[in-house]
Figure (cartoon, rainbow, N blue to C red):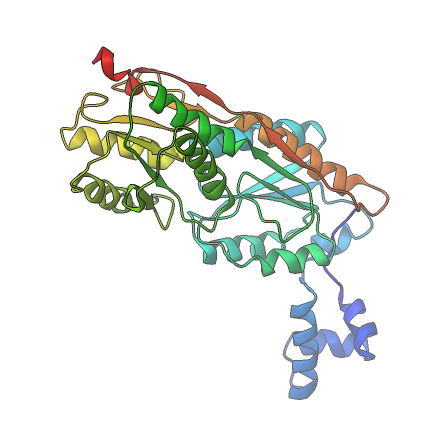
Length: 346
């Protein structure tokens, strides 16, 4: 598959006017009527016209460039995913263009639009926490741009996807706390609209129901921006700790939320795990040397990036339309450390 923005000649043919008229309309020439300018510009916008000479020169081939959209590269998980993507892309002779959304839907829109200004062969994307509408991606996908989702996905677009076993990650983390003697387990997580939130919550919920425990609604805290703003997590912790029946453990579900929760609890003078136990998702290589060492769910980020890149290249290089797509689910690992020390050992 090869995605190319339409040309001036394509617009002219579609509208039944000359190439010269289209060119002048796009340049806002005084020679062209407002009605014709509107007709041309509306069609150009709706059909992804990009005045990119590089894309034009590569019309019959591949640009050898793929775009990547992640929340932030400072996140250990996403930096490891990018390493996996690059290991495949560079070996195949492709360059990568990396953009960050910082968990903003508006930034995601801008990034995707900017990427398609380039001579782009395909897109790898993990949705921002604010993204509820994927029409900007549907439009590009329908036009033929190969897209592969990883980590935070949507089921509204039929294409390849790579995820971790979020249900099992949530289940294993909660089960570890239960086995260590903790009974009042709170949950600090991302907003409910993203795929990883519901999948990890389902694992958490299943582990509790398995032992006949109900989940108090006051124990569930959603961070609207995935903890991008520290105050989101601080507010969640203050609300949990002000409850009459305080939790004795917390399960957090992202790198940012987990490490910030550990930092804030320590700053508050709360001892882990003496006062409250903590288990979370994190791919930081420092989990062993944090104080205390952090029990954590590890995701195969490098492998996720590698698989996603391989799947995208298969779409880009396919000589025939691809109609069958696959969702790959990679296993997670739970590493047990001192932050969930059994209650009887405290």
